[in-house]
Each structure stands twice: as C-alpha cells, then as structure tokens.
Length: 325
Image 1 (cartoon, one colour):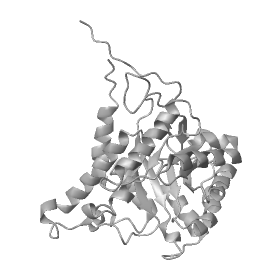
Image 2: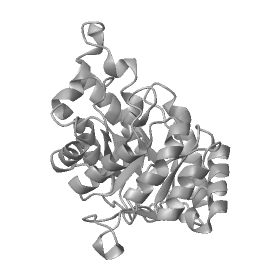
Image 3: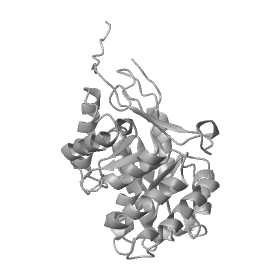
Image 4: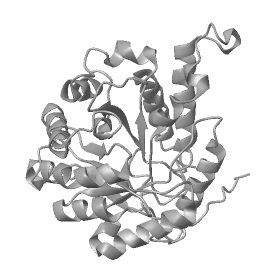
C-alpha cells in the first residue's frame, strides 16, 4: 500500500542576495556567493527548493585579539598581527567560504584606529583573498558612524556586506551602502517586530536596499537562550514563506563570537574535570550551536574555531542531499 507523504505548500520564498563582485561586475572577487532563495523550511527538499547552501565565514580582526581563548593561538597566532595573512590562512588552510573583518581596533577604548586605517585594513584583506567580504565595525555606534563611508569607498565595486544597522542608528551605514552599492546587515535584538520595522525603515531610504539586506536577528550560544533566538529566526522564516516581504531576507549569525564568551567553552579542564578536555568541549559547543541554527534557516554563519567549521561543512553537505520522497 502506497503511503502518501503530506507536503506543506507555501505562497512565497526567501529573497536571494549575492555577495561579492567579480571583474565582470566591476569588482576583484574570484567568485560571488548567493544565499537565500528557499521556498520551503530548512532542508525539506521534498516540499520546495533549497537552491543555495548555507555558507560559513571565519572571523578576522584588524588587531590581535587579547581576549580570545588561548587554544586559538595555534591556529591564528602566527598571522593575527596581519589581517591580510590571517584572511588568507582562513581561506586557503581552513576552507572559509567568506571572511568577516571585524574592525575591533577602532574601539575608542582599545586602539581608537582612524577611519583611514580601518579602510586600509579592509583593502589589505581584499588584496589577500578572492572570496566575498563581510565587514563590521567595533560595536561603538558613534565611532562606527565615522568609519562606514571610508570603508564603503575603499571597497567600492566589491559588493561587500557592511554592518551593522540598528533601529536607533541605521542611517549612517545604510547611506554608505547606498552610495557605494554594498549590502547591509540589519541587526535587531532578538525581536521579530523590531526586525521587521528595521527592514521597513531601510527600504524606505531606498527601495533598492530592500533587496540588499541580510538580517542579523542576534543569536545566542547553546545554553544561553538558543531556544529564544531559534524561535525568532523560525518566525522570520515562516513569515517569509507566507509572503511577508519585510521578513523575506537571508539571515546571518555570529556563532563563534557568542560561543567563545561562555564559561562552558572557556573553563579549563583543571577547574571543571567533569566537563572534559577544554578545547574539544569548546569547539563542539560551537558546532552544536551552529547545527541548531542550520535548522532555523540561517544562511550565513560566522565561525571561529577551524575544526568547528570543518564539522559544520560536513553537516551541510549531508543536509543538502536531496532525498525527496
């Protein structure tokens, strides 16, 4: 007797966004990366199309990080004084699909790097690797507002993903993206209503920007509110499939950043013998967090530990196999 597999029908799909620009498009990237386009819930190939696989970025800072777990030094310690070499290693040795440049040195409480030096760091990474770039500021809105334009101009033609735009401070980065044809990260504080409102405000600045938004709903690490973050992303994805154009954007999450500030990832084994070996525990904490978000519909994940990235790449390979009924 044949078994009928019930299939959900959706009225719409997630929009597609392409990162990077090749020589033919006016840039210097070796290739572009397209995310989004799903017409079904994550990896349910039998219900719709999943045309573009999720992609993985690795973090690169413009300064050597002083607060990273010591286990990261064996992977990045020889290059983290040079963002270009650091990015090159992430791509060529660790297999990153993308690079996220975090301009942490611009923080007034750290190096207070000038906008010109921030732009130079981005240029150095662009020259070192051919993959598309994500560039984010230091996290201090007043300083970030000063560096967006120089960065956007330095990367003109490259179609980078620049961020972040927030509800109370979205105009500086959006304007820089509009003037230089870049993509923008719209970051909201784990709130579906703010997420949608921010997207509307960005689109009101320019209708063209509505198709150049990547949503950052703000995520949490395993054990630190991952269920709430997941539910917000799930609601956004369901909204997109039901036809809500202001939620129909691909999503990004900073997995590595969130995971590697938890005590479970960083506590030495001698302090908690029952928790097991610290580095293995940390990378598995990162991989498990990322695996959960794959099921929420995330399109871009920014990782930190190269071994965690390797695990997730294999997981994505398996999930992208179309075992349609």
